[in-house]
Amino acid sequence: MRKKTMWLAVLGLAAVFSAGLAPGPARPQSAEDLFRQARASRSADEQIRLYSAYLRLRPSEPAAYINRGVAYAEKKLLDLAIADYNKALQLKPGYHLPHFNRGLAYQDKKLLDQAIGDFTHAIRLKPDYARAYKSRASAYEDKKLLDLAVADYTKAVQLDATDAHSYWRRGVSYDIKDLRDLALADIAKAIQLRPGESTYYNSRGVVQGRKRLYDLAIADYTKSIQLKPGFALPYRNRAVMYNRKRQYDLAKADYEKAVQLGPEDPAANNSLAYFLATCAGPASCRDGKRAVELSLKAVGLSYSASYMDTLAAAYAESGRFEEAAKTQEQAVSMLRQEKAGEARVAGYQKRVELYRAGKPYRAE
Image (cartoon, rainbow, N blue to C red; front, side, top):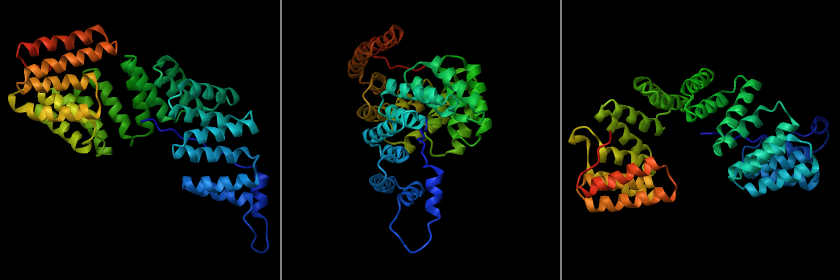
């Protein structure tokens, strides 16, 4: 959950103040009136209309192009937004803000190299611009360049020590790099700065779970849920912890709640299906027929090797071993096409043999 915020430009103060000093009878709206109304509006459509009217009167004002670009971006009209940022840069080449906003638009279009280039240009023009470091770090994360992401998040918090988001994302990057203690320290700092942010507790729970600190992970997921009861992810994550503690009834209840909150979420459907198909506990925690139904729904929503693996396990739990073996073979083939690691491919292949032998799979 990485929120992107584009930033608005302002007109020169002299222009704004002079518009406020004009006495006398009613007159047609001035360019400055249009600009102020656009800035005050909360409607992207209205902003676009007003800035367009302003630009018909003042076609050389870069601030209006920047701000109309922000409105276009809010409506996901990214090409129009980029065109306006380009125009602003033609009019004012040394201005950092259109580079920054255009970088965000490029990132939304998954054009990460262009985004990084714009963020870098913004930093070059304004070296103390913490938001540009934070946004470039996010783009580096998307490219899996975690060392560069960590370096930029570090610069962001040096420039703004109250930036909880950058501490959180640096912590997530540390976690991916298996630097768990650094991850916990950063996410704890983010929580200290913004104790009401549900996502931060969920992220710390993930790190605690990887350190096998299951009770601490459960406490964090519980806090995340308390802060945002409609947030399905911590229910699924807490279910994993309960499952590892062999508290199967609690695990099942959380998996069920995640599906209730996100009935069209493929991950929620797959997670419950996997539990019902492979639970290592008593027979009462498994339900092969329902696992097949949930797995088929997950695969229909998002066709992937891992979801096919779950479907195969569900078929096996239902006693449909021939279908299980064929489905697992498809999952193996998909992994090989993805050039997955040999250990993962070997694990999938082992389950093919298990199903051919007429045996269901039990998760460890």
